[in-house]
Length: 116
Length: 112
Image 1 (cartoon, rainbow over the protein chains, first blue to last red):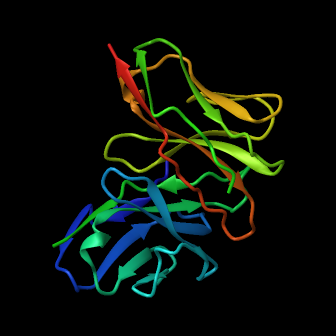
Image 2 (cartoon, chains in turn red, purple):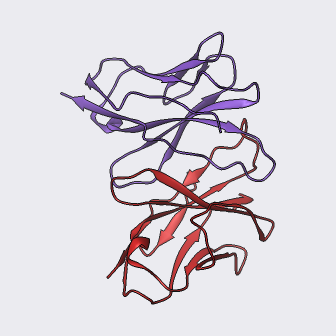
Image 3 (cartoon, rainbow over the protein chains, first blue to last red):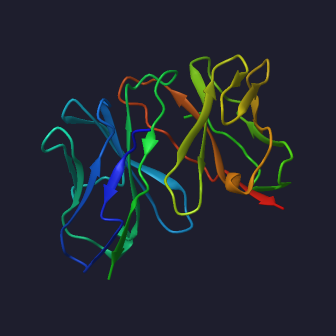
Protein backbone atom coordinates (compact mmCIF):
# COMPACT_ATOMS: atom_id res chain seq x y z
CA UNK A 1 0.00 0.00 0.00
CA UNK A 2 1.41 3.44 -0.89
CA UNK A 3 2.56 5.51 2.05
CA UNK A 4 3.74 8.95 3.00
CA UNK A 5 7.45 8.99 3.76
CA UNK A 6 9.27 11.57 5.84
CA UNK A 7 12.95 12.30 6.20
CA UNK A 8 14.88 12.52 8.39
CA UNK A 9 13.26 10.55 11.20
CA UNK A 10 15.13 12.65 13.76
CA UNK A 11 16.69 16.08 13.33
CA UNK A 12 18.70 17.91 15.94
CA UNK A 13 19.40 21.59 15.40
CA UNK A 14 20.62 24.56 17.35
CA UNK A 15 18.37 27.44 18.24
CA UNK A 16 18.31 30.06 15.50
CA UNK A 17 19.24 27.65 12.74
CA UNK A 18 17.11 26.96 9.69
CA UNK A 19 15.70 23.49 9.26
CA UNK A 20 13.91 21.81 6.37
CA UNK A 21 11.70 18.80 6.93
CA UNK A 22 10.98 16.68 3.90
CA UNK A 23 8.01 14.57 2.90
CA UNK A 24 7.08 12.49 -0.12
CA UNK A 25 3.28 12.32 -0.28
CA UNK A 26 1.36 9.54 -1.99
CA UNK A 27 1.77 10.07 -5.72
CA UNK A 28 -1.80 10.70 -6.88
CA UNK A 29 -2.73 12.87 -3.91
CA UNK A 30 -3.52 16.52 -4.40
CA UNK A 31 -3.78 17.96 -0.88
CA UNK A 32 -0.88 18.17 1.51
CA UNK A 33 -0.67 18.99 5.19
CA UNK A 34 1.75 19.53 8.02
CA UNK A 35 0.86 18.81 11.62
CA UNK A 36 2.96 18.84 14.75
CA UNK A 37 2.76 17.15 18.13
CA UNK A 38 4.66 18.45 21.09
CA UNK A 39 5.55 15.61 23.45
CA UNK A 40 2.51 14.58 25.49
CA UNK A 41 0.19 17.03 23.74
CA UNK A 42 -2.41 17.00 20.97
CA UNK A 43 -1.71 16.69 17.29
CA UNK A 44 -1.97 20.28 15.99
CA UNK A 45 -2.72 21.44 12.46
CA UNK A 46 -0.14 23.75 10.90
CA UNK A 47 -0.96 24.19 7.23
CA UNK A 48 -2.73 22.72 4.22
CA UNK A 49 -1.50 23.12 0.66
CA UNK A 50 -3.20 22.63 -2.68
CA UNK A 51 -2.41 23.63 -6.23
CA UNK A 52 0.91 25.14 -5.17
CA UNK A 53 -0.50 27.45 -2.61
CA UNK A 54 -1.49 27.47 1.03
CA UNK A 55 -5.20 26.82 1.41
CA UNK A 56 -5.38 27.16 5.18
CA UNK A 57 -2.98 27.79 8.03
CA UNK A 58 -3.17 27.91 11.79
CA UNK A 59 -1.97 30.60 14.19
CA UNK A 60 1.12 28.49 14.85
CA UNK A 61 2.17 28.82 11.21
CA UNK A 62 3.72 32.28 11.44
CA UNK A 63 6.32 34.01 9.27
CA UNK A 64 9.02 31.64 10.51
CA UNK A 65 7.35 28.76 8.69
CA UNK A 66 7.05 28.14 4.98
CA UNK A 67 6.04 25.24 2.78
CA UNK A 68 6.98 24.31 -0.73
CA UNK A 69 6.43 21.61 -3.29
CA UNK A 70 9.66 22.12 -5.22
CA UNK A 71 9.55 19.32 -7.75
CA UNK A 72 6.13 17.68 -7.96
CA UNK A 73 6.99 14.87 -5.60
CA UNK A 74 8.47 16.39 -2.44
CA UNK A 75 6.66 18.58 0.05
CA UNK A 76 8.81 20.52 2.50
CA UNK A 77 8.36 22.48 5.69
CA UNK A 78 10.99 25.10 6.46
CA UNK A 79 11.49 26.75 9.80
CA UNK A 80 13.70 29.77 9.29
CA UNK A 81 15.02 30.41 12.77
CA UNK A 82 14.23 27.59 15.14
CA UNK A 83 13.22 28.18 18.74
CA UNK A 84 13.29 25.78 21.66
CA UNK A 85 9.49 25.59 21.54
CA UNK A 86 9.62 24.25 17.97
CA UNK A 87 10.82 20.94 19.38
CA UNK A 88 8.10 18.48 18.42
CA UNK A 89 7.17 15.60 16.15
CA UNK A 90 6.21 16.95 12.74
CA UNK A 91 3.81 14.89 10.64
CA UNK A 92 3.22 15.26 6.94
CA UNK A 93 -0.08 14.06 5.49
CA UNK A 94 -1.72 13.91 2.10
CA UNK A 95 -5.18 13.24 0.76
CA UNK A 96 -6.51 12.57 -2.68
CA UNK A 97 -9.20 15.22 -2.51
CA UNK A 98 -10.60 17.54 0.11
CA UNK A 99 -14.00 15.86 0.15
CA UNK A 100 -14.53 14.53 3.67
CA UNK A 101 -16.73 11.65 2.66
CA UNK A 102 -14.25 10.41 0.14
CA UNK A 103 -10.70 11.07 1.08
CA UNK A 104 -9.05 10.33 4.41
CA UNK A 105 -5.68 11.82 5.31
CA UNK A 106 -2.66 9.54 5.12
CA UNK A 107 0.06 10.44 7.59
CA UNK A 108 3.75 9.76 7.61
CA UNK A 109 5.53 8.53 10.72
CA UNK A 110 6.96 11.91 11.45
CA UNK A 111 10.22 13.74 11.95
CA UNK A 112 11.24 14.36 15.52
CA UNK A 113 12.77 17.84 15.68
CA UNK A 114 14.90 18.64 18.69
CA UNK A 115 16.05 22.23 19.10
CA UNK A 116 18.91 22.73 21.56
CA UNK B 1 -15.64 23.33 14.63
CA UNK B 2 -18.14 21.16 16.49
CA UNK B 3 -16.59 19.49 19.52
CA UNK B 4 -16.36 15.81 20.42
CA UNK B 5 -16.10 14.27 23.89
CA UNK B 6 -14.36 10.97 24.52
CA UNK B 7 -13.29 9.12 27.65
CA UNK B 8 -9.62 9.64 28.45
CA UNK B 9 -8.86 5.94 28.62
CA UNK B 10 -10.38 2.49 28.29
CA UNK B 11 -9.11 -1.02 28.88
CA UNK B 12 -9.88 -4.24 27.12
CA UNK B 13 -8.76 -7.84 27.10
CA UNK B 14 -7.30 -9.34 23.99
CA UNK B 15 -9.76 -10.97 21.61
CA UNK B 16 -12.73 -9.26 23.22
CA UNK B 17 -14.85 -6.60 21.50
CA UNK B 18 -14.20 -2.96 22.35
CA UNK B 19 -16.75 -0.18 22.12
CA UNK B 20 -15.21 3.30 22.07
CA UNK B 21 -17.83 6.02 22.58
CA UNK B 22 -17.86 9.57 21.28
CA UNK B 23 -20.34 12.35 22.01
CA UNK B 24 -20.85 15.17 19.52
CA UNK B 25 -24.05 16.87 20.57
CA UNK B 26 -23.42 20.01 18.47
CA UNK B 27 -22.83 18.13 15.22
CA UNK B 28 -24.19 19.81 12.11
CA UNK B 29 -25.84 18.15 9.15
CA UNK B 30 -22.73 18.45 6.99
CA UNK B 31 -20.28 17.04 9.53
CA UNK B 32 -18.80 13.65 8.79
CA UNK B 33 -17.71 11.52 11.74
CA UNK B 34 -14.14 10.31 11.32
CA UNK B 35 -12.06 8.04 13.49
CA UNK B 36 -8.30 7.96 13.46
CA UNK B 37 -5.89 6.19 15.75
CA UNK B 38 -2.28 6.79 16.71
CA UNK B 39 -0.12 3.86 17.63
CA UNK B 40 2.92 4.57 19.82
CA UNK B 41 5.63 6.50 17.98
CA UNK B 42 3.65 6.61 14.74
CA UNK B 43 1.58 9.11 12.81
CA UNK B 44 -2.21 9.08 12.98
CA UNK B 45 -3.90 6.40 10.93
CA UNK B 46 -7.36 6.55 9.36
CA UNK B 47 -9.78 3.98 10.75
CA UNK B 48 -13.29 4.67 9.45
CA UNK B 49 -15.80 7.42 8.76
CA UNK B 50 -19.53 7.87 8.26
CA UNK B 51 -22.32 10.39 7.97
CA UNK B 52 -25.61 8.82 9.07
CA UNK B 53 -25.56 5.08 8.46
CA UNK B 54 -23.51 2.49 10.28
CA UNK B 55 -20.33 1.57 8.45
CA UNK B 56 -18.09 -1.49 8.40
CA UNK B 57 -14.60 -1.97 7.05
CA UNK B 58 -11.77 -4.41 7.60
CA UNK B 59 -10.52 -2.54 10.64
CA UNK B 60 -13.67 -1.68 12.56
CA UNK B 61 -17.36 -0.79 12.59
CA UNK B 62 -18.89 2.60 13.22
CA UNK B 63 -22.30 2.81 14.84
CA UNK B 64 -23.96 6.22 14.56
CA UNK B 65 -26.91 7.18 16.74
CA UNK B 66 -30.12 8.07 14.96
CA UNK B 67 -29.88 11.71 16.10
CA UNK B 68 -26.14 11.72 15.21
CA UNK B 69 -25.23 13.19 18.57
CA UNK B 70 -23.08 10.22 19.43
CA UNK B 71 -21.20 7.42 17.76
CA UNK B 72 -19.33 4.28 18.77
CA UNK B 73 -16.25 2.76 17.21
CA UNK B 74 -16.35 -1.01 17.52
CA UNK B 75 -13.27 -3.18 17.34
CA UNK B 76 -14.65 -6.67 17.05
CA UNK B 77 -11.69 -8.53 18.50
CA UNK B 78 -9.05 -6.40 20.15
CA UNK B 79 -5.43 -7.39 19.72
CA UNK B 80 -2.33 -6.03 21.42
CA UNK B 81 -1.63 -4.15 18.21
CA UNK B 82 -4.85 -2.16 18.70
CA UNK B 83 -3.42 -0.41 21.76
CA UNK B 84 -3.41 3.22 20.62
CA UNK B 85 -5.02 6.61 21.09
CA UNK B 86 -8.32 6.73 19.22
CA UNK B 87 -9.58 10.08 17.98
CA UNK B 88 -13.17 10.87 17.06
CA UNK B 89 -13.17 13.90 14.75
CA UNK B 90 -15.91 15.81 12.97
CA UNK B 91 -14.93 16.84 9.52
CA UNK B 92 -16.81 19.46 7.55
CA UNK B 93 -16.13 20.35 3.98
CA UNK B 94 -15.06 23.97 3.97
CA UNK B 95 -13.64 24.09 0.48
CA UNK B 96 -10.11 24.77 1.63
CA UNK B 97 -8.73 21.32 2.27
CA UNK B 98 -10.71 20.72 5.45
CA UNK B 99 -8.15 20.06 8.09
CA UNK B 100 -8.61 17.56 10.87
CA UNK B 101 -8.78 18.98 14.38
CA UNK B 102 -7.52 16.43 16.90
CA UNK B 103 -8.68 16.32 20.49
CA UNK B 104 -7.08 14.31 23.26
CA UNK B 105 -8.74 11.04 22.21
CA UNK B 106 -9.18 7.80 24.14
CA UNK B 107 -6.10 5.83 25.14
CA UNK B 108 -7.00 2.17 24.63
CA UNK B 109 -5.04 -0.38 26.63
CA UNK B 110 -5.28 -4.01 25.60
CA UNK B 111 -4.22 -6.71 28.01
CA UNK B 112 -3.58 -10.41 27.56
